[in-house]
Length: 554
Image (tube, rainbow, N blue to C red; front, side, top):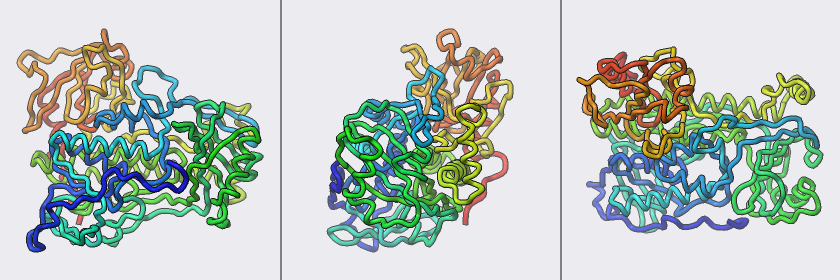
């Protein structure tokens, strides 16, 4: 997308039959999602795959300008692969595992985000957000063409809403005039300037950082390796920081720290941007500007993500700095967490209180992201003499003292949330590996082709029982599924003989293991042997139907 281009119209405005209904009898939809960005589209696809009708409203008619988010983590790729978009992202994206940190003009250390083998996906890919949104929008349209009740409406702007005990009423403005529509459940995925949040008079709690950063996406052919390069106090941006990342199509992301007191309009003019880039890349590198922007940021969160029938996800619920790639990746985990719970509630298989666990689990995830993002920002941009003294002392030690390297914080990169304190967690046998404890996401491992080639290719989207080196008693179900309280549980049987990595990742020193897996691929409970009553109790806990009931938000 060239500099200052218009967004591509992937879902142009079309008149809906809902607009022809009388004001006294508006259409009622099970789920309406406001915002057709990456998070809104992700949760819409997940719900549609579970048979839930969805309407997506967006005042735009296509994807936005500029690459914006570019770093997508392994966990995001795993989630999107389950939804049918991950392979496209993996094929198009630039894969990387290595990062290098420089001080002035000298490298002080490097790191490898994925030293362990045996994963389908790399630690990260770099991919312009407009590609991601395009793949997601195409997947929405594909599912709709195959019969899913999935309606993506561009040119539909929410202008008012009214919340009731059992539904939400929305007023929508379109090129053909206004209309009213109702939703049993409303999901706000409409970004940091959320219209829904504003109309409900809800706000963020957090911190604004007094600094500015210049993003420049440039097209160039260069010999730089496919790695993340970060500079403290480089000669081309003295006293500040800089970042360099490769994207597809010979596009490179360059990030310059600018400081607080700047002329925001002046710094993005090409005559001011180009000399900065030339100083960084050298006189022999030819490039063209594709997209330029200046941003400030805040680390903040809503105090609750569920307000009865309205649920908030992604940037409409929380915001972080770009250091560590925790924004879009955290938002995709929101969608992954929310969809299965809402689908069960709508189907009548779980109480509405299950959605309170979306609030508690994803606020935990956001708190972790905000904590790490804030620490990274404070390290990169120290605001006091003591903070700068500490930062500089750490950088002085790094080359010769390996113990100091973990203290260098150029952005702790996004990792999946582990819901250790979740009310949905069931039994745990502590003799099994810590990494796959209740609340943690599954760790992928290669399987023989006859078993599906990868564990995560087989797991997800429904409750499953992962049985490793263990025979289910003859009196128990021997097929591929069994039912507990109206919920089908699929059985995945593995042997460490044909899946050897299952031993270090799931068994440890135990002879066998049985894992109950949630639809979002997080562990609900685990044991070293099969016990039907224990599995039943764990499932009831995982859908909030036993133990103390979760609180109902006001």
